[in-house]
Image (tube, rainbow, N blue to C red):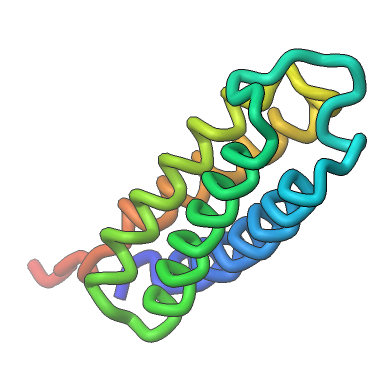
Length: 126
């Protein structure tokens, strides 16, 4: 299948993004000063931000595990999780670590692209 290696890479990166988002969500629920550092956030309530981030991480984890299993459900949830992760990274761009948010944004876009281009082999018979 064309793009199977890329899809496996995307699934592993989706799992990594999911774990990181769950960790960031727990840190936000704990009101860690790492997330604010005298900056304004879109979601000013860290409790809300924490739960949104944990739910996003759970969606990404479900999509990553399902994509590793080769399910179509994993492709759909993976694209949704990658897209929402990219939007979340753009929202967090003005936070304490803008370069980290940019890296997560690029990784989410790459994961989404890797899942979308997965397809059948090209028929090269003449």
